[in-house]
Amino acid sequence: MKNPKLRILLLTLAAGVLAAGCDADYDFGKTGATSQVAVNALLSPQEDFTVKLNWSSAYAGEDTRFAPVHEAEIRLLEEGAEVVRCAASADGKTVTQFRATAGKRYRLEVTVPGYGTLAAETDVPALPAVEMAFRYNKNAYKHYEIKALECTAGTQAVWLDAIGIYRRPVYVYDEFGHWTGEIIEDAGEESEERIYGFYTTSPFVDQVNGANDAYEASDKEATVEFEQFLRLPREDCAPALPLRFSLWSSCRRTRFRIVTASAAYDRYMRSLYKQRINTEESADKNPFAEQVTVYTNIGNGLGIFAGCNTLTLEIADR
Image (tube, rainbow, N blue to C red; front, side):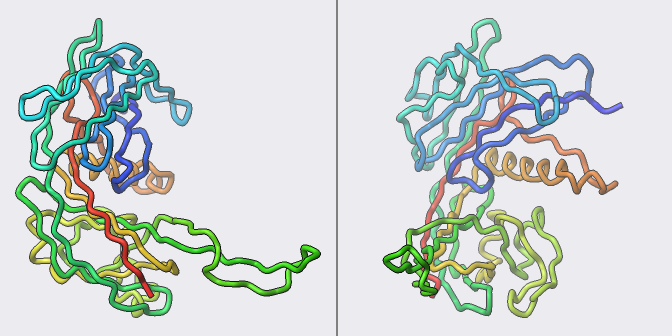
């Protein structure tokens, strides 16, 4: 018999690597698991500090519902000094005007009447020092190189993802509203699309999201595809240089987000990705798929309180 699960709603940082909202299963290994408070709060100098509070829910497939915690007190301490104290919003999502400072340690305390106090601590790493450049186009693939990458000791790993920036074409019409057959490329409004495939031969990149892909290997200059992101443990940042990789993209510019992750943020994001992969429909056909529980560091509850810092670089590709 499978162990019972509670499902909680997870909020990931807008500047982070995965989707902005998802849920995750927590396995308790016993019957009769009761609902617990789930805290989701990610700290970053780029984002207003936001705390999301929900009651966990027994797993009910896609119909799982998450009730917000209607009443709670939120405290945030920076190096032991209180910087935020407020009542939680009744809808379960509390947005403050506080932004974290790199290099500081934080403690979160959430007190729920009739339940108790939940607490966790985290650090916020400094921004990385990065030198990155566009190399060339090779058919449908754009090639890049990270020449320098330095991180402080507070960084557990570096995560890299990308957004492609496009300009829509303009279709020319005559005075009667009929298309003339003329198309003016790159003259319309800008649009953005998430880039899902990274390709590299570097042995230092974490293989958690890697899969063999020999299609168009000569154009990609790689036979491994990394879905959505590249992850480098801090100790491998220097040995990995120069880190060369390619993307399949037809965009005019690419916006890279380089995230320095605290230990808590790194464990959370990595376990969240592994659980998503292992619970997708295709994983049901894999007898070797492992059951993955998303990492939590919340005392007396579930969820995550973690720090990160995001450097954004926009590179012209042509």
